[in-house]
Image (cartoon, rainbow, N blue to C red; front, top):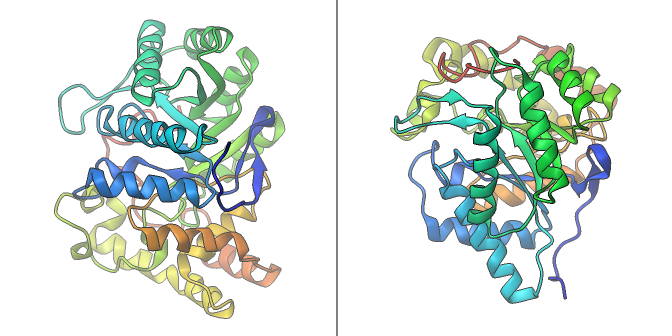
Length: 339
């Protein structure tokens, strides 16, 4: 028996993996975006499942395992209540945060990958991970050993599909030649369009699906953030270069076109941003994250929004690649990006 829930349109990533056209990025329910509440997070995860979203994205580093544990509890409750769970879980390994707050190092050693996979399976309470990403690639290393290890885990039945995060077109091609890649996860939105030059064309050529994280520009494209004071003291965006005073003032001017398109369709700016992404390719599945029920359903409303040629041209003209001012991460966060 499966649960009775809303049926959403589906899209196919690489290797025939079919998922709801919007996934859910769970990172924020554990940390980074201000105080979190486990009880509220569990309620929201249940609502995500009931809304018909069947791809939940997490990582072992989010909350140092806390995020995976929450999702594991959600899956267990589904199994108790409905006899089964149709949620597909995507998780990641490859970033070792150690004990410092945000300091990190990329670790692609096979023994580390295997240990992380086993730990994630235990926290999630499952026997096989639907989609397992290498979270970052060591720019000083060779991806071959990591891919061979991941391929072995696929053969052992512990992983169904492999993915990569934030890699260059050449790294994607090299990895795919060792073992087929199902999905590439990278930041992609109206204010972060770097992937359009080389990475997205390579993904298309190889038949690899694209899973954009931060598809709402870390909340900026919703139009709700107009000053740093809109963010709580422990929100990591306060330190993000794009949210610093001068950069933010410039970036706010980019939203004018988004608001105009939203007004034409009686929609919200965030819905326009998601609809624009969905219009770029049939094999793109954004994973917006939120901790609020209202915003969850607002995001789902983007699936019904169809932008016409005029809308797409206006947005492309107003927000071309490199329009946003400021790096998308701090210097620490940029380590390992597009390696």
